[in-house]
Length: 186
Image (cartoon, rainbow, N blue to C red; front, side, top):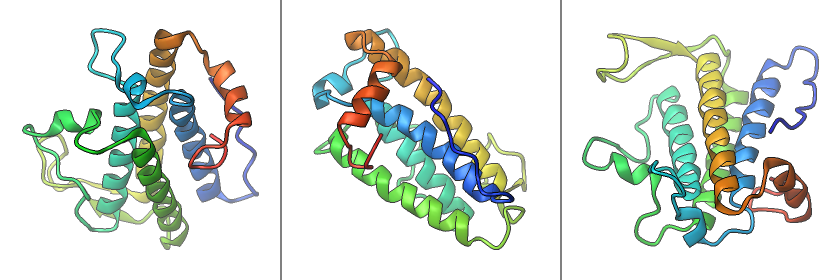
């Protein structure tokens, strides 16, 4: 479901990109409103996706891209041996802990996007087979990529939530206005 993103101040491209990213984060956050960790971890289809897993994955992906843009290693290193863990709560992880982590990641993303000298600044892509050799992308590209990635998973979250209890995005927007989340309003 599309919610209204306020118009940016004239010429505030960073603000516009961050506002659209926040809108899509809200779609995923709203999908877990009122659910227990067990409900949020359930998989109502043959897919491995769960709402809890989508929250964790979206936070982890956002953190990893901003770390790369800063020239740092991602907080969590994924490879074929642990890739499945980025879509599921493991150990003592909870939906609440992942939402709190994502809140910190979102603040770091905003701080980075507002502090980088130019959205045209580039950084090297890691040496991984799915990236072009010696590839580089801009800060603008990474923000657009995060919007796309988060929006894609917000759509998954809509479908999963409706499969769990019939609640639609429209109902969850109304519920989010009644129940503040770890992020404030979802």
